[in-house]
Length: 281
Image (cartoon, rainbow, N blue to C red; front, top):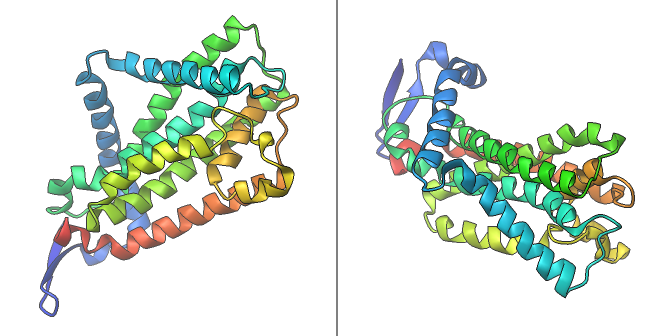
């Protein structure tokens, strides 16, 4: 049950829970079935309405890997640290593609579900969170390519691979935090739908996707690490490749702090503006 409250001073409609339902975080658990439904619906829509279906989640990273391998590995002659360059690229591209897809999908999620957001009460945080889960499914499908490439080059991960789930979780938090920010901003400022693709395209080249972050001079590494995806990608690479692909510890610390700050501030801003979504969406 929910109440529609009309504020006569500012003439806006606010959908809010009954008094017995004001515990927001408990509501997230209470509406878990809605979360499952939205995530499952997005997955079905994404693949049913495409010509190649699930294969698109494989074709896109495969083509991107080939392009980045040619540009950075062959033409630019970047060092791969003794690792086959396609594997180096895939280890950087998977977390970046997950982040970029999640940011784009969750950023527009509230606008896409405007009819539901404007009519009934539920914790709006469910909407962008379900979009991140959908992108995580893409990530898992694309990871099959990395496994195939590693088998082709007869490359076996070392003991560091046990830390891989930690960096996947870090990528998830980064995607969720930025997605929550963008989704809240896009409700009020629709121009963000033009800004997000630019951020994705620009971020691909300033993040160490097609090259090692070690090419950046050490005195500038900590500044470079202000891009939180640098730590995510470096950690992902280290967990799979090990060897010379060592983690720049100060940069990793900066990335972890930034990711946590983005998540915290994103949730804070989202909750602060959430009560106006139904009125302006």
